[in-house]
Image (cartoon, rainbow, N blue to C red; front, side, top):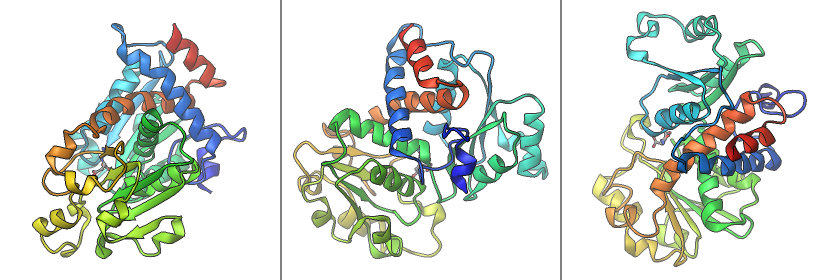
Length: 329
Ligand code: NCD
């Protein structure tokens, strides 16, 4: 159902809503296209004309720093016109429905909406209602999915580790409430990663996580043993009802990534975090700012990955070769 919504009859991306069900080929096409856009950000004139004349609206109903800004920068580097709707002062605050807001912006000839919403399924719902020439990218819906974050994470892993097939990857922390973890698991599985581990207290581990092809661990040192990649997650306190962790101090003692715990992973393991980080809660500053951290490169890569997804959706066919030509120009 989602795939019908997400792909056109030729199997090309129409919307980008979830990683679930995307083929390995499509994921690799996005990664390769993103690779060709990295150089654009390193030039003096950081712009290619690929999406000139296209209108992109950033519709963020939830707070965001990295995701919203990198989407905006990505759109501008592709020469699109980008509008950031300030939800606090928009008509949604006066009671307008989400679909009415979208229909009005659609009437202004918007080509692409980038949507973040606290309700799971919001981006899918909009995608199901817009006409065929309007496209939707999911920038995070509730605790369901955050597919562009997962794409920038696997891009960063490939940049540092090469092939996926031999890698052991640990996802650590509040997996239960994390849309990032869900999307990462689907991406890593599709890319054929050897082992995906989930490390969390029982209260923050999704029920039957094994069914997603993930090995659960409640002991962090055991779970980190000889992994190549450590993906840390923020404690999503805004999504918790009731006390799911004993105390912040105890959480840090058991699940905070310190240099001592990181020593259980491979010597050359990389440490990632989608941000925003809670230093001293899920990660020690010595690790966050240490030599194995690739947390800031993740942010930089997020621009190229979001450029690639927008270019593949809006650039027409064959978008990848046009994107490459534009990036090479
Ligand atoms: C994540 C999000 O908003 O889902 N952050 C992000 O997009 N960079 C993760 C989080 O909020 O913990």
